[in-house]
Length: 271
Ligand code: NDP
Image 1 (spheres, rainbow, N blue to C red):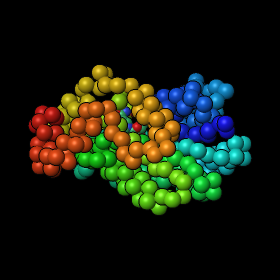
Image 2 (image 1 turned 135 degrees about the vertical axis):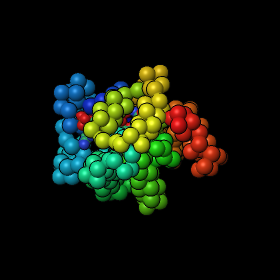
Image 3 (image 1 turned 90 degrees about the vertical axis):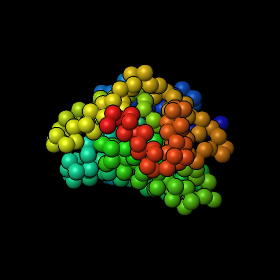
Image 4 (image 1 turned 180 degrees about the vertical axis):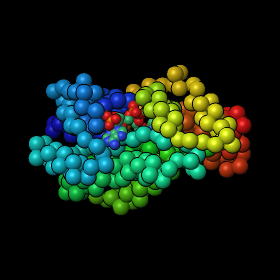
């Protein structure tokens, strides 16, 4: 059987790294990309080819996809995963910073999708797996810019699903809740640089409360397993939120409606 070929972004740590390793262990040849070369080199193997790049660099993404086609002749799976979280209130996060959040989390995904789609269309097969977030299904104070970027990922994915239906291409959205990776540490480091007046301090304190259970959360392997499962199904799931408490949060938002859900979130954040 022909070896399946995957392209995984954000593979230097967390979910992307766990996914690249798991796919390679399960017979895929993986092109693993991120900016930190030394971290990528740690996973280099017979079936993992690390490539250093920034997902905002469209020319670099296109040349990686050309390299994949030139060397392997096909591309079966794109895992769009590279991203980060910008914390801070809508008022205080600068527009420049907000743009950067969208450049990486939304346009980075879009560039990769545009680069692989012509090849997937031509081969009449392929699976695009977009890692969104439960914050792509609802939003909470202090996470607005990040949640907006993940809502955009959900919207693009849903539209794309319809556009490529019948062309042999699947689009899957996996929405993680809190997962133990470098993600939370990085978001709070970035938050330090945002100046908030005293009136918003209760929200900043609430953000810390909201993620305080992160050390007890599942590791990235839970998402990697969901990605692997999606690639092996003849009819993959459209949307998948996990772990279980994230699924519960999405259902609660839908059941309780905006006002009651917002009250529950505020209570969780302590204000
Ligand atoms: P990590 O911080 O561990 O990993 C993020 C990855 O994205 C790194 O490999 C990083 O590599 C890469 N990355 C970030 N910016 C760029 C860029 N400009 N160009 C190329 N690569 C980039 O976090 P996670 O593994 O947790 O996050 C992965 C995805 O999961 C993200 O999209 C995140 O939004 C989503 N998610 C995570 C949750 C969590 O609780 N952990 C919850 C919900 C969603 P490098 O810095 O080397 O470039």
